[in-house]
Image 1 (tube, helix red, strand yellow):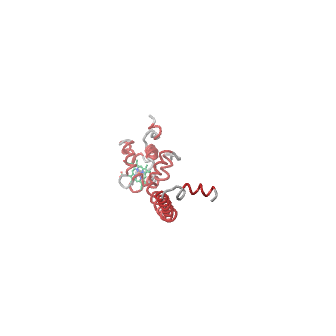
Image 2 (cartoon, rainbow, N blue to C red):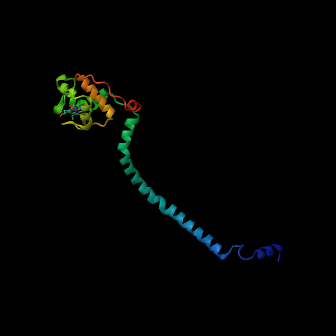
Image 3 (cartoon, helix red, strand yellow):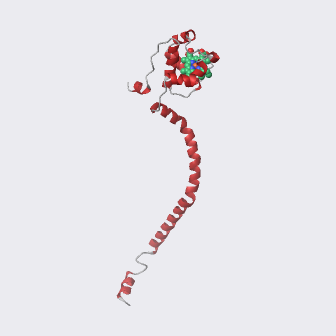
Length: 170
Ligand code: HEC
């Protein structure tokens, strides 16, 4: 009876929307609710379980890569003497299991004759009773320094190997 009622009636039907439009809106809202329920309910719990296992697996897988990166890109690089004392002296100090004894020119002489690259190769890959890197876990550069340190103590006059950065920039 009032003017307001009249004008709302005159717009006709339910607020001007067709039945199919209303259906679409309802369907959309329902779909959103289902998606939200899936995300909130199921998602996080199963996701969290997978994450923990996955993180462990990935950490185990990338660990060696991380070590290599640290060795190449920074961290205190060990001197030949430090590597020797930490790793090589175990056999070479006393000449165990057939190792050429530290400072023994007679034992080192023939080996030195083969050249630094040959000795480095043996130290990196292992030879006879010596495992790769003498069983250590160093950078190739550090092993090179240790070889120079040991060989020079046995009579060689090898120069310090170039640091990887210096070699790369030349
Ligand atoms: C488990 C004992 C052991 C350790 C630890 C060890 N060595 Fe040796 N090393 C040997 C033995 C044994 C030989 C002799 C191998 C042969 O000629 O059969 C040898 C030989 C060498 C040679 C001479 C290789 C050649 O071609 O004649 C070098 C260089 C060398 N070691 C460097 C190192 C360095 C550097 C380290 C430490 C990073 C190291 N070694 C640690 C046992 C060891």
